[in-house]
Length: 284
Image (cartoon, rainbow, N blue to C red; front, side):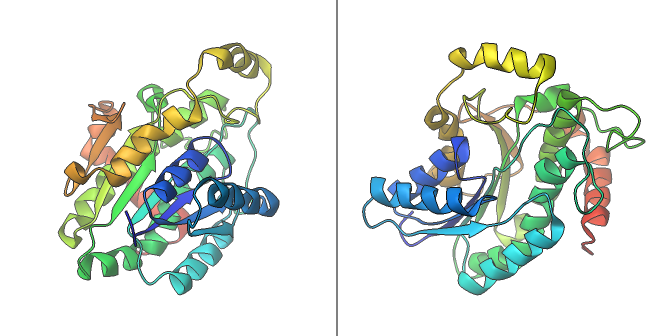
């Protein structure tokens, strides 16, 4: 990965941090994105301490806000003339329905539309890298929760019925559907797009929840895998030489796995693609 540029979102802790650290250890220049300026700077410093000589650049943005994503993308395009790996990792689960500054339910906005908009904003940079001989990869960190998900086009943002896990599972299903739809569109450009399940990992994932879900998550924490183990599949999909040209797949435990029946329905993929682009105001 030496001389390659990699971008990891949600990289201040957990899977994202370990993914960024692993890429730095492999010699990549790593751009990390976090919401909190102090935490993002501290994470960059920790990686530099762990990997002497590592090139790590901190970037700050709230990826639930579309203006913030566009600002971030403009800065990234100005800073990096090439991009080899984009790891869409940032996400969370919320036990109460909240709207973002764009008036969109927060789980769908952050966990799904954040992936969509940032990827599309950086797509020309990825295409330019491919045209120059690189083999760019887009890695979407989804979840096995997508098997429980269903895209409710009549109530996509849970206005009538909201539940934390229901919203999260739908957003993670959205990640997989977006992966497949995008993979078809950029295959000819030499860009691969894959999704993955990292495992059930001991992170700050459920810090925004209380009630029954928060209680169950607290009880589960001692039995969850470490973040470095959770990052293994992300790193494999981002770097494994044998995956050159492999696209439109879903991985678990660093191996391809069949995703849910709904995720494989091309008509649903195309409906989610069209809906997502409309929600982020992107005309392609």
